[in-house]
Length: 201
Image 1: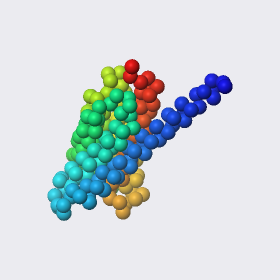
Image 2: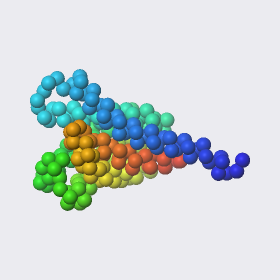
Image 3: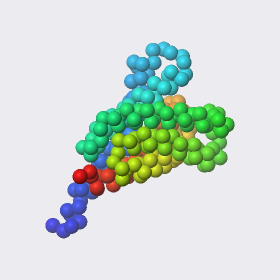
Image 4: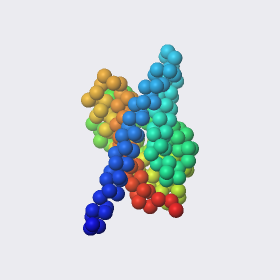
């Protein structure tokens, strides 16, 4: 058996973990808010209350799904809490920055916003999410993880804009979450593969 044949199972396993990570990161975002709408909203018309619940539940389920995937690498259950907090703060930061910079409604942003401002806006919540999550990671992974979440958000917000225009019936922030989660999942999934290649002793 040659060396390339020996590497095949490991490569296949890495691809499966990467795809699973991205899928879980994206679809858990859909599951969390769906449950919140069913059991938590309670008919409230207070926008901040509803948005907080949507973002928090989305973050909780993303954190839970991610933790179940890579808990064997030594990540504590605190990952779920910091991920929930990071996603919630990140989305409110995004909303605030878009409005402060004159962007208005997310679904009505122009091409300059899409090409230049949204990627810049996305860096800040990316740092927030990655920074909080990094407290549960080993030292040599922290900077790479923060960079990955920042890049994921910077790419994800413009992607979300595209989705919000392609699927307008689902509401702007639904696609915003889904698009950004895909991008963050891909970026952090690459770092996760590096982590798997060099697991903790």
